[in-house]
Length: 93
Image (cartoon, rainbow, N blue to C red; front, side, top):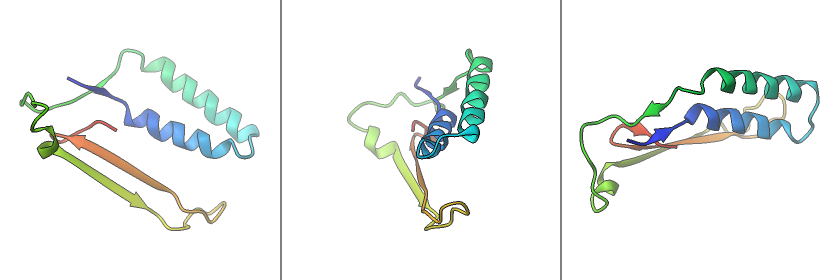
């Protein structure tokens, strides 16, 4: 099994965008993130599937998705993008 935390990746992305000009919103977002982290210490997302994947065939089960919004941010007009990588229908990043 592989533990994965795509929710933390999203949080890290959001906080990183606020580092350009940190202020009250940054402190509130960081505090909210720490509160969330303190409540999920024993939770994990586990890779599903019943197959044990051999290294030689793992790429046959690897799927990656990417999306972007092309300058759709209401605050800055900048683009944002994201990706998800999955093995055997389970997110790994």
